[in-house]
Image (cartoon, rainbow, N blue to C red):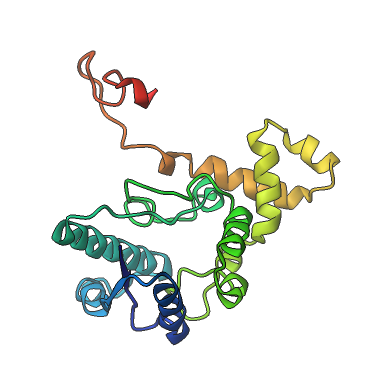
Length: 214
């Protein structure tokens, strides 16, 4: 098993230290690859890029590195996106949700924390504010405008078919429900493979499916 730490020049130093704690606990191989030069090489030609675009470039460069290293090592990239992030669309398309295997993709964020406690992950890592660490002082919950705990509770009801009105009747904030519902609806396209123009009756992923794909 291999781990890759891929900091950008604005990444917080604690991120490297925290990652090293995991590496040491698991006793796995680790390599640090700084993505600053690769990212800046492109962004120098796009001086008007805002924070969102810059963050997306960083996330995609990280996947370039990860997939290239997987080819070098004849290994399989493992994803780390959780169910909450995926439903809220809080990931970069063709980046952090790209790896072909994702062992925690069906766990809400709160469940990931529970699993981490069960596995003995250092408490300091569990308590740390979740962050993509693409910008200084960035946190997931600040970006989303809602805590993971509230989002998880609403998403669980939403997936069971509760209407917005029913969730509000059960004590959820109308603004929180609208925020979560809006993000899920607006990012539905990110959870699908690219749409294919169907020119025949054997279009891959539209008609040509193996039994496991249904």
